[in-house]
Image (cartoon, rainbow, N blue to C red; front, side, top):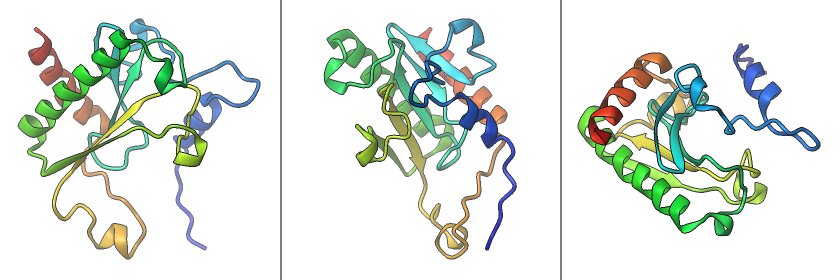
Length: 163
């Protein structure tokens, strides 16, 4: 049996919403933005780095209001979230020179939602060859840059786009 030492996962496990627990790792105060890797905010939504990324630069676009229902989003929340998806798409193309981007929403646990109580949009930058032998044969993903370095790049570009 292969074992991977990942002690940082305990933070995720201990703060994820569980039945009967009111904590939600996506319900955050703006004063904690830098500590929690919030790339930026616009209107009723924000962009946050995924601490357990599929690829380098994986982010989530999140409504500020806690809701698990896609159909429960207001028109303003929907527009703000999609506006952030557009901004991040531009940033990925300019800063990361991506070959593509996966944009998706997992609605409900059966669809793969790890946190179904707070809807969010995943944005995963992709490059040709990113599914190399490590992922295919070794069943291991390699994240090529430290999350703090990626965060600083994304945040500075986000600020340029907003202002």
